[in-house]
Length: 182
Length: 63
Image (cartoon, rainbow over all chains, first blue to last red; front, top):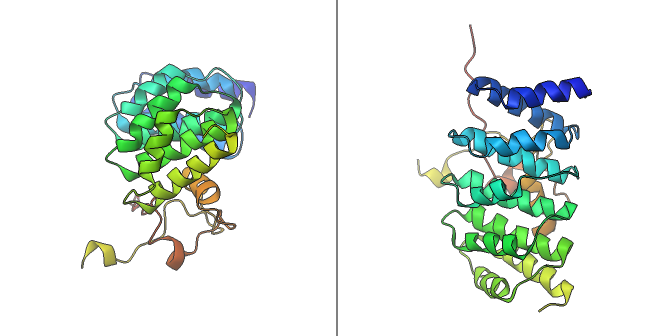
């Protein structure tokens, strides 16, 4: 992917035309799945996290997570993404939790964000609870972060009605134990 | 037909070569569930219990 192609894609991400923005997001998705792209798209993606269309917010939050999974180093829209942890859309909250878990792999995260993620342990959507549990596990695994009240909340999640949530909580507790902070 | 017994069609996230194309599902399958073949999806085994399963949307043919 050439510099010109990336710049054009970033320009379209900021287009006032909704269809053009969505097309640019889909194109960037294809690029990132092929492990292409760079940190210059993080800013326009962050701006789209406040879009009124939930489909756009889903894509933008997913692409930020995928960028982190691809180990793209750069300035991530942490505050904007933290705001999406309370989005009205289930998938946006799930994607945001996933993105924070992936960002831990590039050294981004702190105790405040870990607490924000733990607020999702009581989310109505099982996918959100499970992803939040996985993400705090990543904070322990990658950043050595664990907080006593999170540990207690994770212990409660081990008996969640969703097997995926319960498994994620057990995995997160294992990661915290490995840090030696329990 | 009860919703739980309805036949499922091909998963949105299943790639043509059988791999799971959902980055989120692969994370959970690898990290949390410790599946050695976390990239691969077997319909009978994986679809019923996959929380990330999504049915592939029907694409309208353009004339």
